[in-house]
Length: 167
Image 1 (cartoon, rainbow, N blue to C red):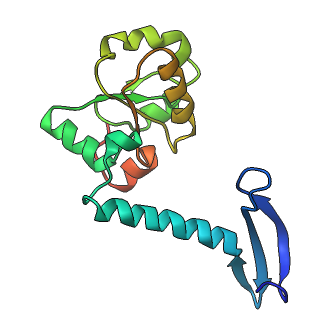
Image 2 (cartoon, rainbow, N blue to C red):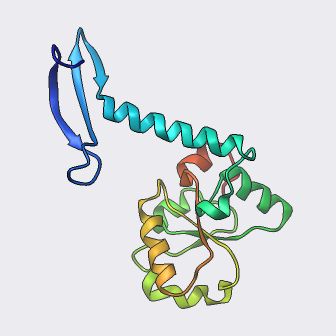
């Protein structure tokens, strides 16, 4: 299929070595074309999402370790909010955060996990701007024995895009 196309840049490996999963771009008549491996991976992800929705309307967030912004907003509005831990730096936090969120940066979290001890039996929703810092924070919390830790789906980017309240 890509025999007559020239690669515009080197393909990038997106899977384990030897898996054959690569994303490459090819150029033909000014049009960017993704490799079949990338399309196949995207198709699989779409099918999984479709299957989850078809089997119950929504995927079970507890099983996936995430809560959607709509779910968190509804919990806040009902007065049943989980503990919300924002691991962004103070300047990002102060520029707008979820109402009631606790701010402990991801770099300070390991030294400050004792501050979260009182929430051991509660769900803790961890978030940052896009997910990278929250992922490392979840590992720190798990190592400290806090097991009911969830990610906010889409993190602050999704919260803002959904026009949910900010403090």
